[in-house]
Length: 400
Image (cartoon, rainbow, N blue to C red; front, side, top):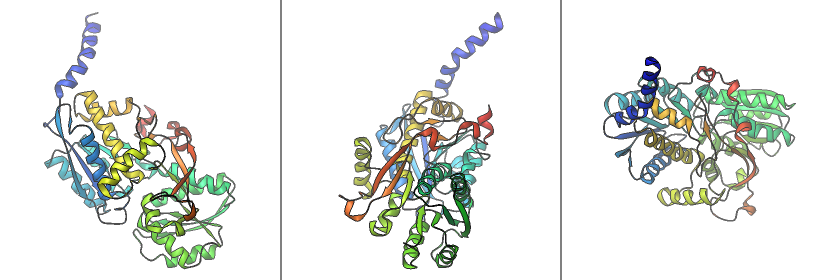
């Protein structure tokens, strides 16, 4: 009886203990570690920093009575640079969480460093499945999309439209390879064939040799398992080579910023899967217009994801009364995400944020009625269809 009473008292005092822990150093500091100058700077970069700053300001600049500070750095898409910056932030500058981490190589380099220091990573830019698979950590959230969602959305739609034979041009690192593998599985499961693939170094300015191989394959569909400037360059050069319209392109990870760079004449008709489109509803338009006023660009899904994930993190601190990573992560996983970005999104034990995704097609120039009017939303893909089920996860945390 005594032991039972003691245990009950202990449990009852847990929230008080958490509250007493408070904010460890009197400041909640969030580092936006992103690509500020390279191939992914348009889709993430300065826009991600602006999105995090908007989230902090909208929270009133304080959480649990303590100021919120946003810092940023350029990881240059280099894993060693990213891990070194993160280590310095944790050890010397008391950064509590790292956001964005566009590119899977930098994310996978920072995640174990953060986990060893009990700091939280909030990933909006990278896509590779291993992030919430065999490389998962207790302190990581994979927030915006993954390669499974991209492959099942776009791959299924293109096969359904008659694109049965595929050839891939793939960015030669973990993101490109997992996106190619996931899409190839979808194509084969739908009765299609994969005729071949070629790996291009990341980043690549000249896609001529890779496009020639795609051309000679005779495949109906050339799947672009790349992103950012690589996608823009490969689509532009495919048109110059006359690869289209004899063969069709499938952009497997296409951002609004890519369409803006390409123009609708070159991009029209592309299928894509996205987590966010600024012109979806009143709430998304309202936030996007504020983002535009600040940056003079409409937000990508990475930018919207950074705002949403930082806000969710701050709400969790507020609810927990502490910046202790274990307590905050419990709150993040307990509470649904409901905002302009996600409806009833849920973060699973594996750290994957499962939410609705959208299948879209790029408009023809004649159908675009206003600036940045680029997408026609064809279908809402429910969260349980867009993302892999928890039962299939390779993350050890999913088994507990």
